[in-house]
Image 1: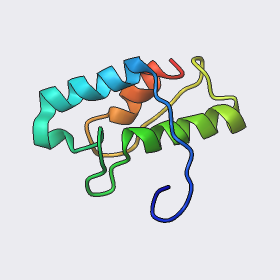
Image 2 (image 1 turned 120 degrees about the vertical axis):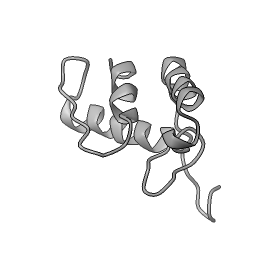
Image 3 (image 1 turned 30 degrees about the vertical axis):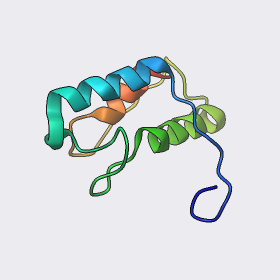
Length: 86
């Protein structure tokens, strides 16, 4: 139950969690707070996983697909996609 409604738990592979942990360790505050919560429009790890899950389900997104992050951050979406779907 989140904000008064039922939500499904999101599962991230251990390699994805490890990447977020490393980024957080190396970047500190400059890397945002994407592991445990968003900062100024940044997606959380779970939100990014949900987006990738939808792409896999609806667009045949897989390890042979191309992914381009056009944001202005430090590239966490690219690192996430490099781990899953690979």
